[in-house]
Length: 71
Image (cartoon, rainbow, N blue to C red; front, side, top):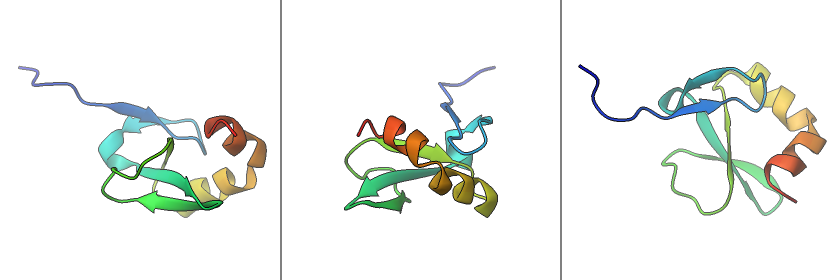
């Protein structure tokens, strides 16, 4: 039997869909990306896989980050 809603998020680095608990939420704080471990920091967040390859790909894509954070 299904119990409750399980949030699914899309990685901004590679585009794969995964459970939100398997991904890291990143927030823009003072011009730098900060990982939000408790998922409670204010502001718009971006989800990314926990591997370094996706994180580097995300940080290189400045245009995509501006769009994601609506700057």
